[in-house]
View (tube, rainbow, N blue to C red):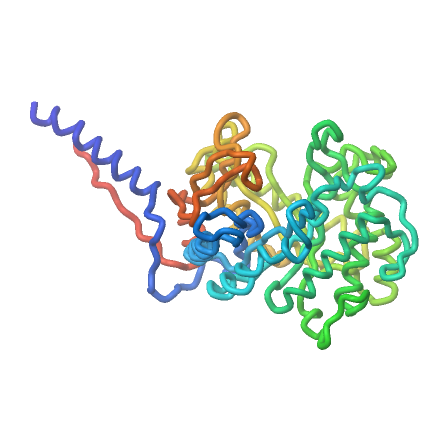
Length: 452
């Protein structure tokens, strides 16, 4: 009888201890010297909450960014062993001038990132012109261009605005940003309700033109956005937009549905990008292509939680990277084939299908350990630091290594009001998996074995 009363008590104790392992206290740091990591810490990147959304998000700081939240994010990133962060620049003229939009990034870039030894990849994406869809037939990037006095031929209003803003950012943040990425999943754009069904890609000719103009203007210190001493620009990497592995349903503005009589795969899109006139002319003039890294997003289509399946999925990711590399080697010059991969997004949504919290941790660990063995890969950015809306339901977005409480509210930027101060409610086990990969101490609790 005594044993029968004790077993439920022991089970309750085990449940409490398991919960304590999952819902870890948010402020756990160690002064212990770092041990050699399981991988090179320079590989470890994280897609973070964009500082733009922290403006007017804390009543303590009216008309300012929530600096407390940004500091907490910096602390958490450092505690997880992160070395690189990717953030996206957003410019919305409906809320203020270009200067007012960029001011939202100043605190993180000039204070938080240096304080926690974080290097920054700045995403210069379509959000630089956030109120115009690049596919728009009258105002988008797909509109026919003409000669521009500053940027040359083939420039339309969208491209001119994008280049002006991108070069303004690159000039403004000298010394604060360590690499830039040009666009994001430009070969497979998302659904735009009432306008586009999603899956459309922008023609590689347009992307090659925009990318090359930015690269030339920035690296060669031209186009009216110049530095007195431009030597720092040469050492800053420019990475191509992260390609979506699913490819394109059709290309705009031509509505092409094939390349060389085949569906428009990610590889076909990439090869056509390298063959565009802007890329080819830059190579002929400079002996290299206008990029320092090749952005790629190797998301598996579906992942389940068994170890064998996760290892198989990561093996397929590796195989796909090999296929991309082989295609470049055969279809471009050696200068193109040697451009290193930057995995600027890869992640695991614990709310999707049969995926689990434990599976996320296992997937993260497997991805970093296996891809770190490649000699043609520069960085891996995990997607993502925090969860984002919707919080629940069939489309819930629970990608984060931490969860910051939020309420869904259209009055807040991005449709979510996050807890002022940004204090995580809990860390997922993936946080600790990343920390261990970086060589930081992880303390484990071992549960006692129960005898019959």
